Length: 228
Image (cartoon, rainbow, N blue to C red):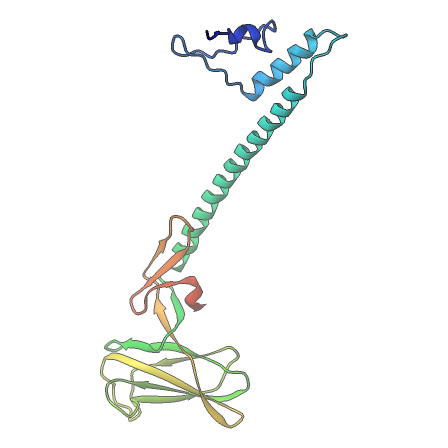
């Protein structure tokens, strides 16, 4: 024969003036307590205990500490949510400030429009004494070759669309290559192309910015060498 016990009668909270059942459906009780309930319970227990037989309040204190930890985690989550919102706002502002500006990207292809120019740069090797930039289309030799004085880190250049013979070069796609003279020896070096930031996209999860350009397509901030 099984015995059914009344949990209320054996509850350690019995006689302390608390109803541990929260309002709910008939016949169903909610025995959960929040931090405020535990504080009231602990205070009442200490006030009504027998001085000669004090109750063991260790469990109450332990659970109260657990409630404090949960409360701390909730506050931390709220702070992280606020920080995330701030990061999103910062990413939006950073992205908006780049729209309509030119960025210098690693690449060796650029498009010359009618009456337009090509702006780019060259990664300057340490010790370089001169740099030569050449632009080619489907025809060879180079349509235009220019020699530039090296500047630290990056040597910028612009091409007005004039060929070596002074005529206007045809519009279209051009390939760039550059060589640098270091200690009398010529060596290839990386070329950079200036492109317009037409719009930006923001990754919802990481808030990473993607720059959308007409020439290079979608690029990240890590691809940008310089902003004009």
